[in-house]
Image 1 (spheres, helix red, strand yellow):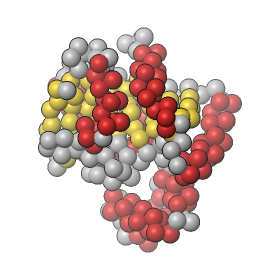
Image 2: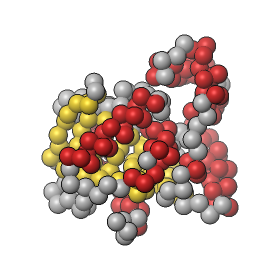
Image 3: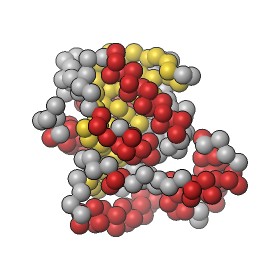
Length: 245
C-alpha cells in the first residue's frame, strides 16, 4: 500500500495511492477513534478499515484524510481544515475535481457541512452509523450520565467553549440538514449493539420522510456478519455517480 504522510497546519494527513488510478478521489472523515500521525493512521491499523481502503485502492481510488484535531465533533476549525486538505490534494494530484466522501459517526457532522459549503465539488457521500445532528445526539445521550459528561467536555473543548455555554451555543448555531444539499447519499447503519438498534429507530423515522420526498438518500441496515459485503456496495454506489464527469 503506497502512501504519503504530510502536515497541514499542525495536523497530520495521509494519502493512499492506487496501483492503477481511475482519476477519482475519496475523502475519509473518521469517527471519534480516528487518528493520523506521522507514520500511520486508524485506517491502516484497524483491520476492517484497512480492508475497505484496500478494496477502494484496488478499484483505482486515491484516498486521503486528516487527523482533523482529533475529537472535533464537527467544529468549524476541523471543517475548514478538511476544505484546505481538499484544495491541497486537487492542486497537487491528478484527480477529477468532484470527489466522493466516506464519513463515520461524528465525521458525518463535517461531511454534512461540506455538502452544503462545497456542493459543486462533491460527487457522492457514504455514511457509516452517522451522527446527523449534534444537539439531537446530546439529547439522546443525557440518560447515560457518565458518557454524557464526557461528551459535553469533548464538545466544549472542540468548540473552545465553557461547558455551561454549550447548549445555548448549539441552539443558536443550528445544524445543517443532510437533505438540504440534494446530493446522493448512501447510509450504512451497522446493528452491532443495543445502542445502534436504538439509534436505528430514529433513523427509520427520518428516512421515511426522505423517501416520501424522493430524495437521493438510501439507507441499508447491516448485521455485523454481513460487513464484508459493504466495500463492494460502496464501489457500485460510487460508480453510479461517475458517469457524468
